[in-house]
Length: 282
Image (cartoon, rainbow, N blue to C red; front, side, top):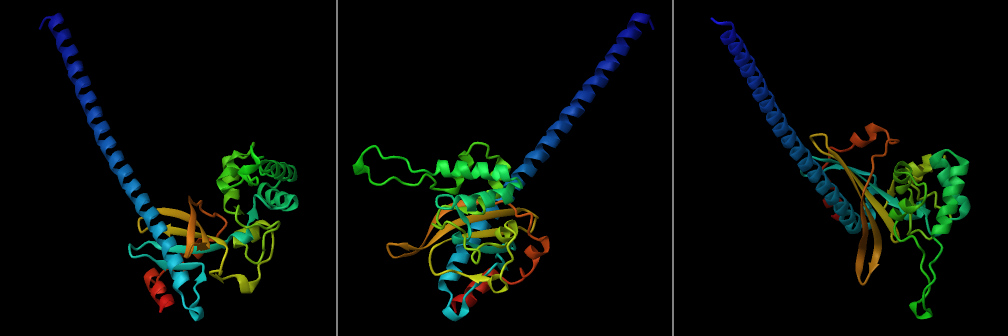
């Protein structure tokens, strides 16, 4: 065979090998992409299902507490199993046990943010910013009525200068705009708040029922059977007015409380949530 023909055959063989390699890589990319899209869709569906379960758990907690007989008051945290198999841990946090961004004293604000950041100067600086931010805005005309406090939701805490996302998420669960107290009520504070401020909880207050009035945050921590986890919080005002027994003021997505022992979330979830509801209503 002439040398030129052999060279052309060699080039053709290399070209065929490269073409087959590219086709194989392209096929693998298509397969991996399809698997990724399938997994992403599955994860999205799992999160959506867990989110719906969390909202259902919050609504179930409200209905259970409001319909419970006086001698069958439901105590929280409530741990049970939803119809879809999800494990639910439902806690109730009274707003009076939190730091009110509009009415908390400078001392309370400084103590709280110092405990949260571990730095006295940072706690003092953030407290000063909150006091400055919450000053009422002057109304343009007297007919507009009295000036209102600046904080209308805890989400506005993120607007403070130097408030990092990590610090914002850590503070979010412990602050409120509906307490009206200069100092938090430690008897109504959550275990996480008591640990943060290094306050020893009273044993009798470890499990609390639904208060008769005021505002509360109901927190539903959902663990699905496939391992998906979702936390939903609802700020609820009891005795909502106009004949309504309650009003949901705000829905929020909650963060996982890493300070809570993991085993506590898995205990007591064998009973069905609907059975708990029926037992309380009977």
